[in-house]
Image (cartoon, rainbow, N blue to C red; front, side):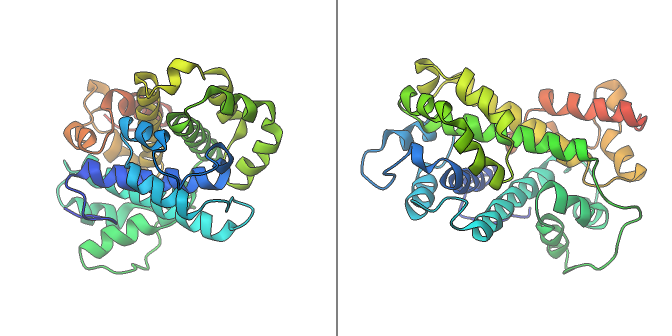
Length: 294
């Protein structure tokens, strides 16, 4: 099975959480470093909090300590390069496990993932490059039919859910409700950083400013559940829109009318932290709307 970045992980979920921890670290450093003003000192309890909700605390500490004081306005290009690298790494890890029911899976993905769609959905074409490389096809040059562009509403939906996800991740590390309250009182200035980082302030403000309670700050089931839910929704949108042609959608939607997506592995989803109960309804709604699948 293909591995992608940070291969010291013992399990697929470890690998995914490592990449998710790098992504969260770079995003938090870009937009919310003022919530964690001294990330390099010993005994920072928020690292322990993040570990309790599944993140790799060592990775988060390494990134936040190394990026201290360097927000999105200081290092725009470098920040975005890292955002996209880890978003693509997460999607790569997920898709190769979720589609493992398909015979010759890597060949199928190599020939059918649309780089134009991937560039919109994950920021890079790294997923196709990695999968094609695994079967010896480096940098394939073919172009798939059609314009390859996911609908704008789908791209916006990914951004909104990704923004809400980051908000819950921030909550996972905050130890003092007053820090969030101060941020919310000055949300307009915070929004400037969020917009520069390609995030949706309107999706983050309700999470940060309406959900926060002292009980939420104790790494809670609510926080873990929100992260799992949003991660599953984001993956479903990316998966369905990774190619706009009917063949791809027929493969993804096969079996949905029997509530059994025959080409998708629920065990594979669980292996990389996804929940079929959340993924399948998102896919089914799209299969119905496009009138594809069986």
